[in-house]
Image 1: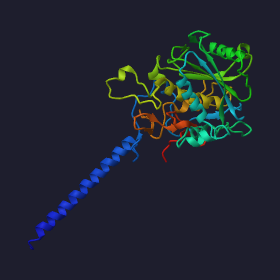
Image 2: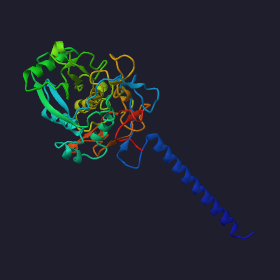
Image 3: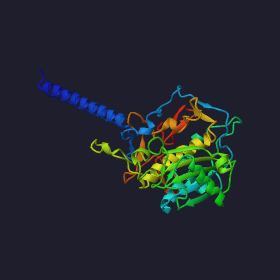
Length: 362
């Protein structure tokens, strides 16, 4: 035997050992990536959080032929533009109003007044998110409009209908706004958003709803107008209606942490996702006789309900899905006008038959 043979076998064994270690390391890294849905981009995260209470009964993480979303022959908001009339009920900071306005105006991707704003946002964008909403049509084949404008605003600093509202008294708030003028009645293109301050309570708020939409009764307002109410939950139930920017108190010792809101305002950042949810449903089911699942029009499951708690690819099982964070750890999944960032839930796509969003991973 040559004296070099022992060294040859030693070198060969060492080579196989190093190769095996490299394979094990690569496999471990692959498993970690699969567990966190991580890409090589350092800003992507998929945090594990407890699902909020209101989403547990209606969440569908993936595609499903079992979701019987049907068209019931009613109108959608296809006339362009969709005119949004904002009613600020209670005391609001100007910075909060500006943040909500910026989100609503980020939806439009066309129109002379919004081209510059659309160009200023980068992908994934709010206007790309709205493209899923615009896939829905009425019986003539007309799509939901892709242009949304803020057509008027009314502020009620005096809480003229009290600090506690009900589903019916909200209509009285709208009636006051319409009668006070200049706040026009827009039958064809208008939707009316009632946004209540943190110190205003609402029937079923926190317990069963974070927002709702319906239409006004002529006996109360004089007209049939699509409207939605959304409340600021910062003081009442942020762990429910500003999820995932707040978690229940009992989760304090669990090691799970709430996400940092993209604009530093837990109440308003949480509110924006609810506003998006209601705008999508108002546009596709304004008179509660167009797009929804289920057989009961008084309790429809709509395109936002199907995706509650889902914000990106890989959602479900306690994960909210793949989202992004900036250098200050603030979490978002889409960009808006003037450099704004937002975290907005996904919505049901009639084409994919699944929840969809502009930040979906291929």
